[in-house]
Structures are given as C-alpha cells and as structure tokens.
Image 1 (cartoon, rainbow, N blue to C red):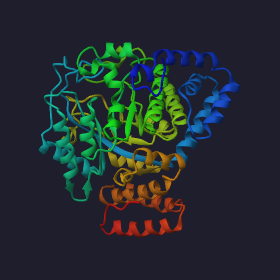
Image 2: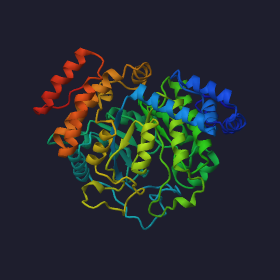
Image 3: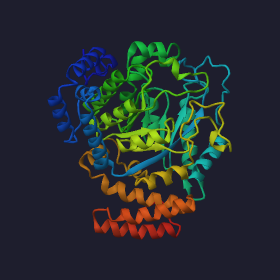
Image 4: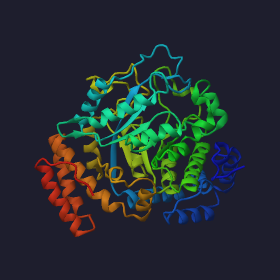
Length: 471
C-alpha cells in the first residue's frame, strides 16, 4: 500500500505505485493537453508529483521536450543563478564486506589493492586538495565494521577540518558512507558534517537484492530507510541518488521522486541534493554486463525532468561523465560538479593518476584550474562557497530560503568572494584574468547597493590577503 508518510521502505517506495505510474505515463505520453498542463504546473516552481514527472519523461514529442529543457534551464537560473558549486571526493578506504556486483570494492575481488589511509596520509591528501583550491570534500569509504568503523570516520573528519595549509582550508565535509544507526548519524552531525549522501543504487527491491547478494547492504529496507534515521539523528541535509544503468531508468526516476516526496511528507524537508551517476567501467566491472544503460540524450532528459520536478534540490554530476556531457546537463539543471577527482584511495598525492584502487574510471580528467576556466568561459561562476552550512542555513531553513528565491542574496556574493580567493591563491594567469573580468561583470547582478559595496570592499581585502568572508 503506497503511503508517502510511512516509515516502511516498501510503503513509501511502493513497487505497485511505481508500475502504475509508468503505465499511466505510457498511456498519456501523447496526450499533449495533459503534457501542457503539467508543464504549466512546473512553471509555478512548486514541483511535480512522481506521476506527473513520469509523463514528461515518457513524452516523445520533440517540441514538448524542448519546452521541458527550456523550463529546466530557466528554473535552474531562478533557484541557483549561474553558479556551479565545486567539490572533490576523498576516498579513505576501499575495504568492504559487501558483495555489490557493480562495484570493484566488493569482497570477492581479490586482485584490487586494499588500502586504508592513516591520519597522516589523510593530511597529505587534504593538503594536495587544498593546494588545488578545493574547499568542499565528499568523503567515501567502503562498508567494513573492522577496518572502517564509525570512530575511524569521525577521526578522519576531525583531521580534515584541522588542516590549515597556506591559505587552504576544507570548510565543509560531506559524507558518503553506508547506511548506519541513528546514534552514528548523531555522531556525524556532532562532528560537523555538511550533507549525508547515500546512493540507493536501485529502488527495485528484487534487483537490489540480486545486485547486493551478500553483506549488510543486502538489507533493502535498512538501506532505503537510512535517510529517515539520518534525519532522526539530527542531520537535516541529505543527498539521494541512484546508479542509472542497473535497472530500467523510468522505474528509478519515479522511485527517486517518491523518495523525495516521502522526505517532504515526513520531515518537511526534501533532499538537499540528488546525484545522477551512470554505471561506468572499473576494475573487475564491465558496464556492458548491465543491460539497462542509457544514452546521453536520455540522461539529459532525466536531468531536465528532475530539475522541473524538484526545483529546489541541488543536482550533482561527477567526473564519471565526460566534459561534453557535463556541459550539456549543467545547462539543464546540474548545480554541483566535482573537479580533478581521483577515485582511488590516496590518489591525490600521486603525480600520475593511480588506477589500482579506483572505484570507477574517470571520464573528465581535467585539472581543477582547467574546469574553473571552462566554466567561467561558458558564463558560469565556479563557487567554493560553504557559507549556508556554516551559518546554520541547513534543512528547512535552507529550503525556505531556496524556495522563496532569497538564497540568491547570500549565494551570489559568496560565490564571487570565494572565486576571488581561488583566483588569488591557485589560478593560472589566464584563469585569473578571465575570473577577475567575470567578477567585475557579476557584481552588477547583485540586487542591493549596500551588498554590492560590501562585496567590493571585501574583494579588495581578499586581494590583500584576508580570507573567509561570507554573508
């Protein structure tokens, strides 16, 4: 029985409801009057139900698809402006007790080098990331209660926040670790994490259990209900995601939106972020073994439909995707991207990108400076801002600001000031030149004269060596 307010996984992600929604979408995808009504509703910026959004995803009318794309682009601008938040993943350990068939860290993979960073090695990795210019990390670790207990994760977070190197500092640590207990989520909250991220991989229960044949992750309900426990533990910013290509994409899309609806219904706060990874080649894993892979065009359509359905959420895309694909979907709703990522344990300290402990192949191999330069040349503002989290603008406070459009008053000036820090401390000459011209132009887009004046004053102070200003 479908019930978005239920705390039981099989009731808020109801298999029958997903199938009925897909059937409804198939029956109505050519009903252009209905499609128009749904698009008109999406224009109100209040979101769409999983069923309405499924109709848009199923629609094959080229004119309507272009309307959806144009609306997605506009909604992205309305909520997030032309800012793109930058981050990097930091892999702490690839020890794992699970048997996930799509991940090279699975227990039975005997030819991957197993590695766990010591606190000293974490310091070196963090300094390498700071020397690139990163301010926001997402830490990753395999599930292994012996090698990667919660105490290790907490100690690692403390280490990361403690490192100040030259002008470098990691100001926000997001955490992507396995489903855990309310008590452990409370500990993560106390450690000062930003967003807790957990990919569902697939919402299709039968497929989920087949893809996770052994280990604690086999428990579908425990995994799917993790966000509720995280919120009970006081973490009010959570990030959802599925691994597209494991199951039929329209099933995943509908269920992902149902999960977002569930969080809104129960906690009053939807997902802070939604990630859209696609299965990629990795050691011991051939994506061709999974017969639900999706084309770049379908991928773009998914991103656009998520943006119009959940207008307030941050959308994340990683270096799994090529520069060309990233360019396409940034336009359609993506608001956060990783740069210069290394998906191996200890990879940032190596001059050459190591492949022996990679979780997946990276498609976009550009340096952070090259990514920043590319974004600015395309008219985007690369943002290293972490102010909302540090000012307590999280959970429902962030959502109310975001939904009302007020967040622009903080985010735009903060993005410009953190970009200025990057330009002063890390950028190449060409990137610095483009960036300073962009900042000068974008100051005029700050609505309030008083804020403009403060930003100008602070930019001079940043030029003179002061750091970490924020609204």
